[in-house]
Picture (cartoon, one colour):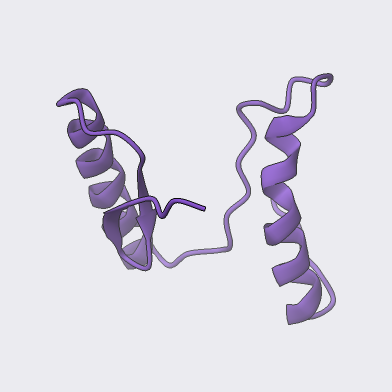
Length: 77
């Protein structure tokens, strides 16, 4: 699905709030992800990172995520 917004601020706000969809108990939003539009080259780079993340998680590493173009350990809050 493609969503077009009026301005950059709206886009940023929507992407920030999108993670709350997975917290909703009703509606089947658990598997819904919102990403900004990526070029084919950016999508390929992201796919490589996703595969690396899956491999590292399968090898037993925990609390890993993709952040700023790298697979990193999540910060503790």
